[in-house]
Image (cartoon, rainbow, N blue to C red; front, side, top):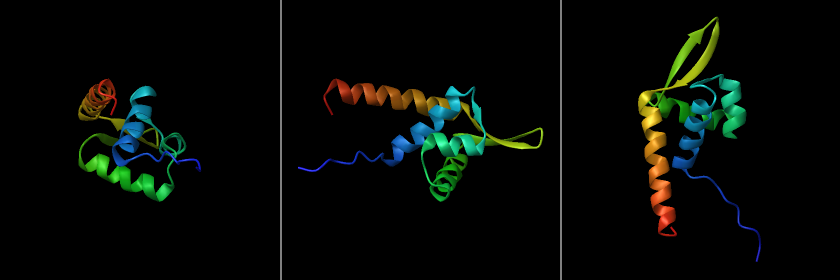
Length: 93
């Protein structure tokens, strides 16, 4: 049989975007997020809008540069996601 393509689902993409932001000290430049999240510009914009609406990420302006910063709710999402992943893996799901 052919190779299966392991595509990320919506929650995995959100997790990846928040994790990379958190791992880089809690804030990230848009271009760095684009490269690290491995999404097209259009798809990233859509996810960013949703993350901002849900207050998981916020925009910061520092020295004429735009950053995205993870919020406390975003960090809470990361902790809950990790627990859920560990739970499901414990059952082989």
